[in-house]
Image (cartoon, rainbow, N blue to C red):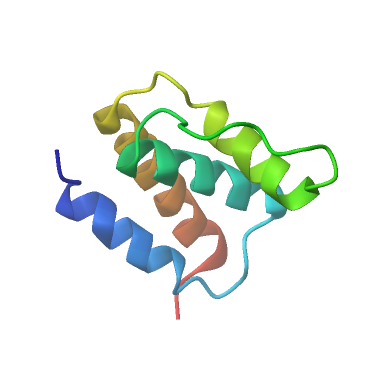
Length: 89
């Protein structure tokens, strides 16, 4: 299944935000994006000393089981909230 045009547009808008989102917001966006495009996490959890990769794994894993449609809706909603919060260039 391919992703919706609205989802792909939202992914483009993230790159145009005037301000970089917080690390927590970026983590949620990452997890939802991966869940919507790849589906359930399919890689083993990185080791403890791979902090950045572990955080990304956890961000994606928290959405395990969420459908592509629901992941897209949550992602689009989050991006729309960020546009309101930060504005776009």
